[in-house]
Amino acid sequence: MNHEAKKRFGQNFLVDQAIIADIVRAIRPEANDNMVEIGPGLGALTRPLLQHLHLLHVVEIDRDIIARLKTDYPQEKIVIHEGDALQFDFAALDPPLRIVGNLPYNISSPLLFHFAQYAARITDMHFMLQNEVVERMVAEPSTPAYGRLSVMLQYRFYMEKLLDVPPQSFRPAPKVDSAIVRMIPLPKAEIEVGNEMLFARIVAEAFGQRRKTLRNTLKARLVDADFDRLGIDAQLRAENLGVAEFTRIANFLNERVGI
Ligand code: SAM
Picture 1 (tube, rainbow, N blue to C red):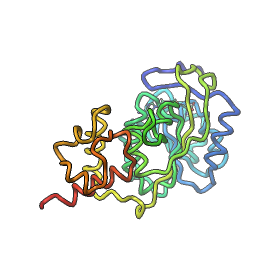
Picture 2 (cartoon, rainbow, N blue to C red):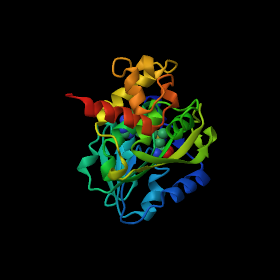
Picture 3 (cartoon, rainbow, N blue to C red):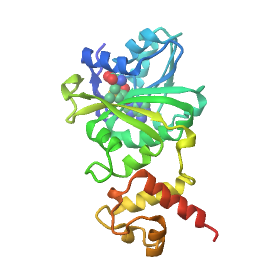
Picture 4 (cartoon, protein in one colour):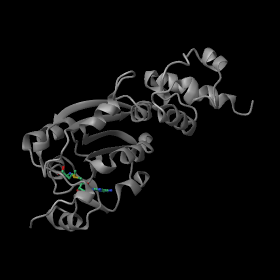
């Protein structure tokens, strides 16, 4: 039975067996892992993962693919969650979770932010993403790829690009290069952000006008004396600040509330 790839679901199926083997090797599945695969599709990763695991949870939105999942795999080894991964409540599964997937690129950033909410329940995540997104995730300050996504993920996760994957490894071939990234949640004790909502707002405001100085983008919150106390040069731009500096700003403002 043939399946016609659906663009609206970001369907680019992995067909390169060497890459698939590399990905599974990088994931290192162990029999008793609580693993969840996002978007199993035609099973490029699902099948080899099932060779190692007692049980695999999968989250899939496409009804045609769900119908296949119900017939093509040993049902005692696979738990099928039908629906949108963006709405999926990962707290409903027993921790510690391992999440993997060749993600639909059209919703990759919202998906990453959705998973991040469950960081405390997650051991690690391995994803195929557009290479440009992976570069932004792991970027260092003062480089072109560094931005909101880098800061918002780096304060919570240790991240590492593992593998480049060319378009011809997929059917149909995407127009972009891809890469595999590993994300490991940082231990709670290492997360220094006191108020995550405030932190997110400050990062968004600072990067909202990327070319402007912090004095400008954060003028509603910080005066020059505040920058002096923080030891941060107000002439810098958001792209020059590391996670530690954003954390310092957010914690400073959080502590000032009510004064
Ligand atoms: N894992 C397969 C592979 O590597 O060949 C398929 C990967 S394909 C890039 C993305 C998969 O995610 C498709 O199976 C697609 O139907 C599914 N998908 C797309 N949007 C989704 C969503 N919002 N929630 C769950 N699955 C989704």
